Image 1 (tube, rainbow, N blue to C red):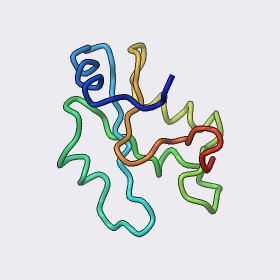
Image 2: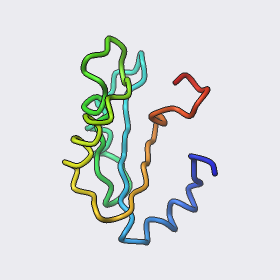
Image 3: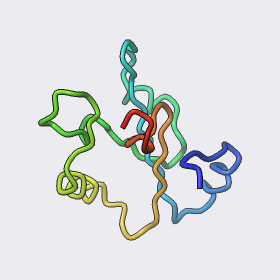
Length: 103
């Protein structure tokens, strides 16, 4: 199964109110836009902002490093998405990247 979905499938999924969407828009190196402002300007209706910087490992010197399982569980639990199913949606990047793709 591909980690990516088509726009038409996304539109179909958005009709299901039990599915929650997270928008992880982020600026890539060299980009200067504000991701949160971009989210407010254009996002999937009903989606929630996922700040990848908050979810990154604060102990790492590298950006957007996958945090410990405990940190992720704590932060993700605070999003209050349960018990509903959830799809992770990102406009700019997939995180964590699939195996063999810079991860």
